[in-house]
Length: 73
Image: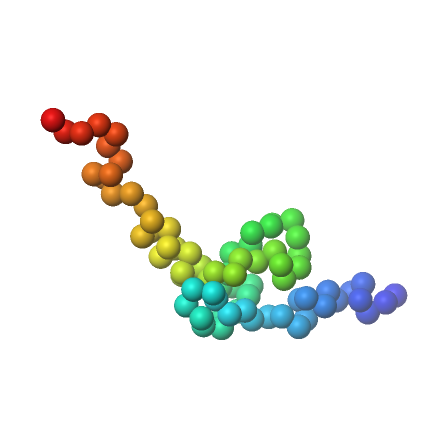
């Protein structure tokens, strides 16, 4: 049995990642969303932390006045 079969190199070496929005180093497993749930490698995680993702989505949503398609005449 080979050691590489037991342990994935990505899971051993890369446990933290730097968020590209807030520039803080955070834990990869708990603080980043998985973009590809069926993969186990480091590339399956987002480059933006969960907090920054929530803030970005909240700020980019349209308000109620922008949602109406017709002008109020």
